[in-house]
Amino acid sequence: MRHELWRRFGVATLAVVALGLGGCAVGNRYDYGSAISGLPVSGTGSIAVDVLDARPYVLSGEKKPDFVGLQRGGFGNPFDVRTGSGRPLAEEMRQAIVTALQKQGYSAVGGKDAAPRRMELRVLEWKTDVMMSMKTLYDLELGVYDAGGVLLAKSAAKGEDVGSGGFQSQNAANAAKTFELRFTDLVRDEAVRKALSGTPQ
Amino acid sequence: MSRVPAMRSRVPTVLGCVAAVLLALSLGGCVGNASGQLSLPREQAEASTYFVQRHAKDTRDLASGIADSMRTRGLKATAGIESDRPADAAFVVTYVDRWIWDMRMYLADLRIEVRDAKDQSIVGFGQSSQSSLKAMGQTHADIVETALDQLFPRR
Image (cartoon, rainbow over all chains, first blue to last red; front, side):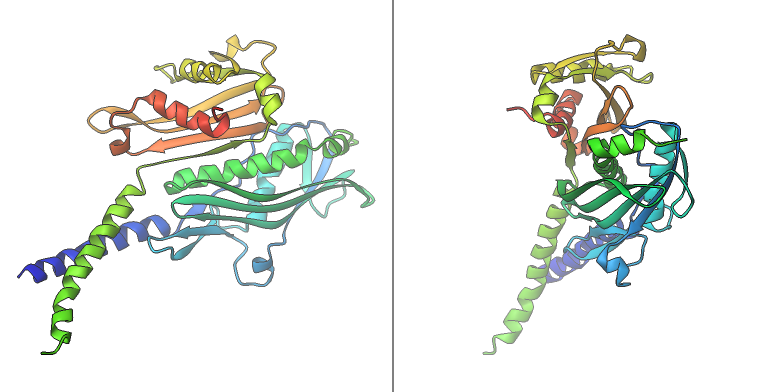
């Protein structure tokens, strides 16, 4: 009788825990499309903006381009986190950059379009990993080129940020803020600012 | 006498104990968290002036509490509405506070952002959140402290 009670308690509790933890971990989405509110540069010229997803697991096809990280269940089992829009991460990041540049006075055009300046962000790594803590792995390279394709300035950031993991909305907001912070730091580089500030009309 | 039936009879007990531990762990893991960072060099952060901008819906004046806590950390900080911002403020501190009712109002989530006053570019953020259970015995000032610890840790 006692064993039967333990068994029922065990099965019921495991079901509740599995549902609860699985519910937190499955289907999470982080939106990067509106991540950037301001940039430490302003001007009125035209900039061609390109974001290239160079993450090895995306290039190999192991992960889809909308993959942004992992949310782990109660046993550490990973579930993929995807972009808020379902579009590739590079497109969401580009949207955030274009919106921010427009706020600063620039007109932004497609990465292949002719413009006096071309900004290229290469995403060699961008992945969050959340269980009890939230880890953000990043490896970003920003290049600014003139109309002839000559590199004017380059900045890079590579590392790992660690904070606490929370609910999806908090994790999503922290992921977006981390991207805004890291990208803003790349633009804050003196050579990059100078190259962008001198953008001809 | 075979040991197999005896082992089998212990399985439900072990299963129950494992489940109870997992339940306790899963509930304990969701009570509160904090994240954030500041990209300014420490010397610049300590020498700069900050203005904590109170938002229109803040009836509790969290802005003053945030500025008070920043001053106790050795920073030069004032608070007020947007029009009060001093011309020499290098950085503007904004915040989003989310309150929830659970037999009383408690501050469930606080997100603080530090931006360059000139161009609104971000230089740091700090976030702290808690469940209703975790909030018992705590004031919103404790959450302000936790969020600021992510940006300006006390020495």
